[in-house]
Picture 1 (tube, rainbow, N blue to C red):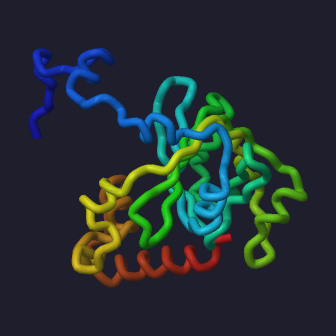
Picture 2: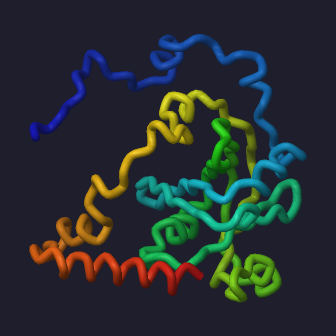
Length: 216
């Protein structure tokens, strides 16, 4: 595949040029940004079983990480503060290392069936407070740490992206079996996947077993 290069004459590289392509921000869109959680934002967070966490390292590299648990897993500590449990993962610790280097984070809360989302931006820190961690126990297992976010801004995001994507529309669901398994993809990208179909099925089954044993 040939390397793509943006033609400089079509490059948008300053805010004035960007703004010239779009209409001015509407009145409500400009006013909707809050500096703390209101009742609607709290109710949305309590319904959300999933969020995306955006972080950035000291070198400027950006990262987005999915976080999910039963609805209400993110704890509202007060109108200015959230706490997110850090469950067992792959131990790369990309988001957590980024937070230590650069505390600025962005959160996108998603509720199944809702086309609108909630965005929260703020500064994060990592806590091992045992009382806080106990609040987040699932199956009698507390997380090792919590991501505590001090909120800078919070606002609802409109439904256009979800409606364009038909994300919740059953008619647009794709068959997962039509795509390689996660194990095969990673093996193809690293050491090479086994050609024997039975061996590949065993590896896939082992992954599913680890999911069951290590979710918490």
